[in-house]
Length: 365
Image 1 (cartoon, rainbow, N blue to C red):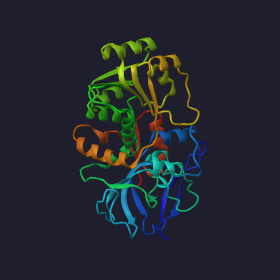
Image 2: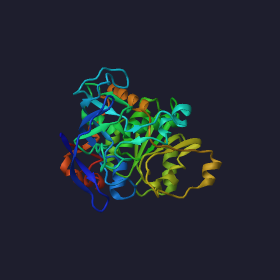
Image 3: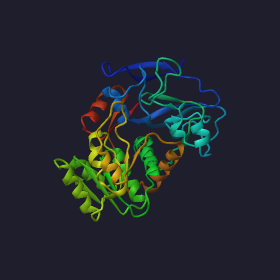
Image 4: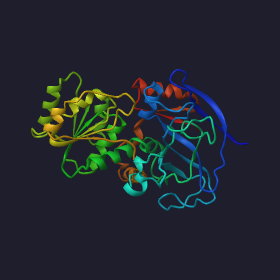
């Protein structure tokens, strides 16, 4: 029986173990995908550190792309209607909603589906079909999973990290309702922040101000369209706020996006929008993340605080279109700083955890 290898995560104390599993039968509507590149998302890192829970043992990895190895006999096209064949490069939505619940059928908010399945996060690997995550040679896509052919002009390195970080930020901007000529502050210049800056510029923001404590990241974010960069190391809250006011005609930003994953940046972040402005937080997505808030500031200054997570299939379609349209404008393929073979996955996590690179990727082939 054909089989494939996977790096199975056993928990923060035991880390990874290479295992071999039999390949599943795809049936008429499933897909077996040979993973070409899978990058380490912040959520993977939270689980690896023990900050976020996951069923064990598990094949992590949801930020990925690959090639169709075997398609179900009934599958003729991708989710946009393009004809597909074995060997085609595809990207898939890592969230599969049920399509039948109140959120899916009435609210049309599939990201809120309580019955959703999330690749690389929700299913243990010790029972068939085993290949539920992308840190493996193969991943099995269940019937009904949204997937799209990758345009020929896009490199693997540009697509893999986009399949979580970029689609998440596309969803963030939908909820933030950015309008033409608004000013934006982005807290954090990791992958989420990079995509936020580029998306805001392409959406008509008048000025995008990027904040970080790393000079190398602040230099890199300029290539993604940041108008102003500010190193906030050592700044007091008052200095932080005054700097942003100076850069926004004395009012504060129309929109502030938190993309750090650090809860402690949120209290000062909520003082950076103008009166009536918006603040969106996306980064600290792990159990126990908390901080103290100045509710007087929030209420009296009428700040709209938006917490958001997950995305929908349309966001992935839009993300691929965005990459194709702007591929020669922004260095998307450089978001991944280093690639590792599957058997060196622990080193890949260490490279991200130590901030040696912003994104490391595993290349199972």
